[in-house]
Image (cartoon, rainbow, N blue to C red; front, side, top):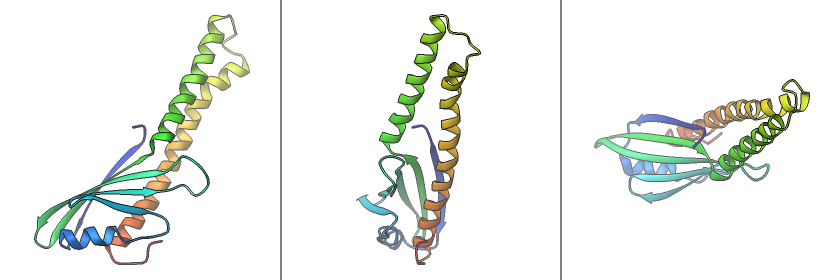
Length: 148
């Protein structure tokens, strides 16, 4: 919804081997099979609720020994709804205060208008870090290495 990154990888392995390698269990990520060409990955945030990364993984067989892996990473629904609620609440209060005569240059109003933007920037940068980390795990699973 709010933050989504898509990745494409090509591996020199048949689709059934790629599927089995991605389903290998690690302590950081769990991947389940939805059907033969679609997998679902989940990287849980170990520090609380929210900020979990959900991966939709599509496998396409290019040839008998090549497979294309398309991965779409995004935040879970709870995180998206939480961010939207903060935006709506803080900007709603700000608009209400403006309508009732609050000065546009008051510290409270500026803080309420700026906080959701600052929060979105921080969330976007943390999503980039999580996305790199999860892609590193997927790459190591595809290369039969120990996941970092």
